[in-house]
Length: 301
Image 1 (cartoon, rainbow, N blue to C red):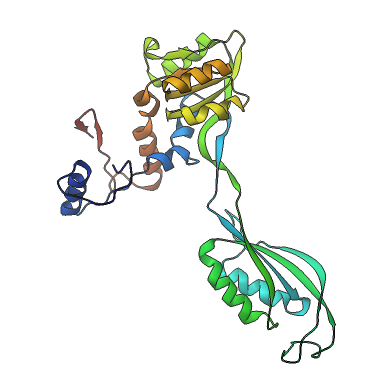
Image 2 (image 1 turned 120 degrees about the vertical axis):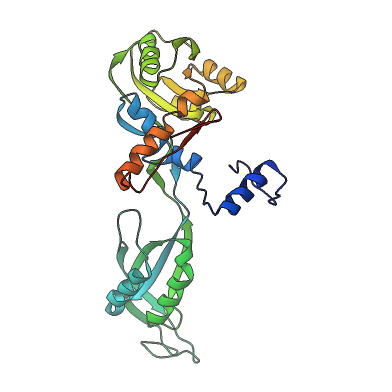
């Protein structure tokens, strides 16, 4: 409903009026369009499944939210205590894995001055200690707790640590999907597959480009597909199936040698409600759930 950011919500505006109606009715609204396109169980995956593509993967993976990397040096005799404390804060958890960290044995050197109170050694003397270099990943919201816990558990007055930003690709989440067809097809066969699977009249499918060889991989990206053209060119799929491209995106795809099938925005996304219904059915009983679909101005259940 809120396609662009709002500076204010005004009851007299088109979007504001709808929001006030929701507020007055005590209704919640969750809009999941773009996140659902990118989700591992979302619309792109549903489109690939409808076309019976196999061995699918994300066409353009997204980066996970920014992560931080904490590196700390600690005397080996208190290493286990520090690791346990930082894991309890939540460090080392990524995806389906927890309590992860890296460890390298090292040797630390320092000279305390006269005002220091070293945990080991004496002021004015150069010291060497057997230490471990530990490395943890953490989400930014854990940064302050991590530093506080580290300082509380670490025996040194001035623990040696550093924190830096990092990121990682999530191979299960992102734009579009690419997968293998159940059998090699020529371009006309791909058009037939799309027309039959999605109930789109062949004459409504806009084809840009041509291909003489057999096709065994397809890329799909429902809705506006401009952002999917370059990732498709970098993939093994010679054909992109999408909702629509604008003029320049279509021209660029043609000049790059990419074949594009444009179904229209609606036809590429009309599986949204059936697919979402299946996902809800897996989580809820129909006695707890009623789904209403509003399409072309006509409500229907």
